[in-house]
Length: 271
Image 1 (cartoon, helix red, strand yellow):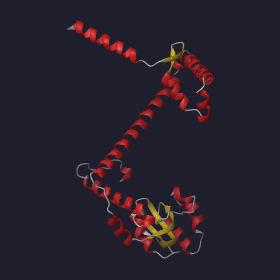
Image 2: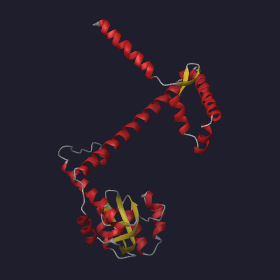
Image 3: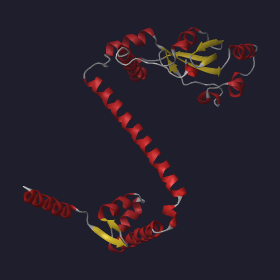
Image 4: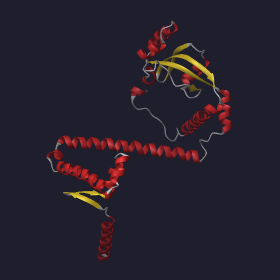
């Protein structure tokens, strides 16, 4: 039995040797493999890739890689590799790499899970559902927003805005919403349902030019100015409505999972 295992192990080792990547060049103990050469070639400009297709070009490009390997070989043999600073930076890179991998893994998993829900029809939105939604909410609005942390400051800003102060200037000065503050508080033109529920009803009831607020939301206190409103054709907003209704169905399904996955906010600062 032992002899048989040795024979099998030897066979696997030979197979591994046969599958070993072709080596183009060596620099000390470091090798430049065929796959590494091709990978590095993908990083250069397309025009240079054409030149590397020639025999002289391939050799010149190999000389560049040989120089890189020579620098690496010297660095590997130096005291830098054994220094505390180098080890610390490598450990930091390892942690960051693990974090990126975990984030990428989580993103891939969630997207594939949502795709599976779609394939099962759990998130499907019919054309009639989208049309019915548009008939109920056929307009889109443009508005400006100022977000602050306290109701007192919100009251002061709202008073200034209603008295005729430049709303855009107030937004740039006071708003905590970095995404809109630089643009004078201007928000993306929105359909009903594309904006947080705390603001939606107010904005869509307001008159153009009107200032409303303070309005409390989970983000803080808002002062809103409505810049415009218009009715939009269904075909122009059909895809947006389909996405909006799919998100609503996903939120409804997630709500049904609360018993299986109870949410608990542990940090007192966030309660």
